[in-house]
Image 1: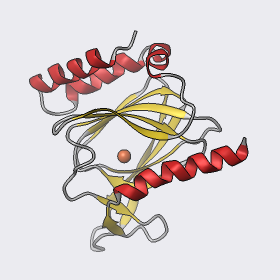
Image 2 (image 1 turned 90 degrees about the horizontal axis):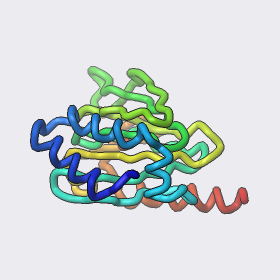
Image 3 (image 1 turned 90 degrees about the vertical axis):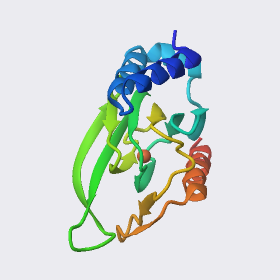
Length: 186
Ligand SMILES: [Fe+2]
């Protein structure tokens, strides 16, 4: 059975060995290798949300639930992360800064994440995320810092791909907007 206290303790033990995502990825992979257990512990997702399971200066654990077909705009975290999918799917587009064009991006790659996948994201990663399926996707996101108090964090306008400061209120609001769309569909 997935146990949150045990999970956070295991992440802390992994961090004590190595401050990168290396061993934390193994902890996340082990957790999502039994998605039914995570679902039983966290509960079957009923709406989109960015739910904080643990927050400290060097470690944040979120339970992120994406609405059907929801997309988040390109952003960075300015800290490493590990994404573990316990239900549904996530498509990630990875971006890089366009040389010679300050603040603008170009697409650099993509990765399809499925249930049981645990994907590490490096400190400088810029990504956008889409839930491509018509049901909720649930993922445990672990970050190597305080997700809600970052330094030098950016997001990029989805139309112009130009850089601007990360707006945490907008990030929260997009989950509320996704839920409003979801409620109208039902
Ligand atoms: Fe992200």
